[in-house]
Image (cartoon, rainbow, N blue to C red; front, side):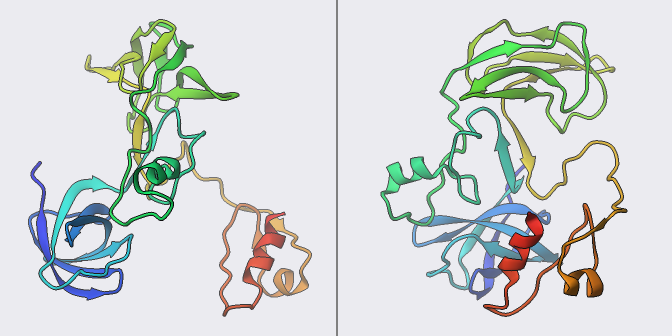
Length: 253
């Protein structure tokens, strides 16, 4: 699929209006070019041939006519061994590696692969040839520190699959094939130890359980005027210093 390009028509801080030609979808990642750098952004709204784009970094230097390239990919998280033991920012940049590349003061436009694809992990298979598996089922594990990091059937693979091949115990990189799964149509899929998942796409199996039980917070103003249910959600609006964070800490206990 060819990448779509566009140009900035308006700029309001981190919010850009981009006129494009081609196909763009909401949640898609794009990069705006400014002063020789490419800044990561996300499409948050589309109206006709104009997209509203939120840039994740300082937009100084962006102007009308600045070019943007859309990647065709949604904003995704890379899931696999090494994630548990890493320190990352909101875009999944490993901060220690970013510091090694740029120094203590982080520079904009710097992006580092979330996981080390050259490192080898001691894979121990748990699934067997002939097993019937679905998305999220365990195929094996690697030890990440003291944690058993389970290697799962990718979440994007819906339906039931048969394990046609599984790797022997040994050291493998994230990109090595550790299993092969065959669908009911006879199509074989190669599985590695890493997968990607869109961060804004809910990930659950089955149906969402309806919240029914009341949550006793111990705060009369909340329990009387704004009762909450266990498993539900609430918002905490208010100006600076109103006590929003204090209330959240109390409710999280």
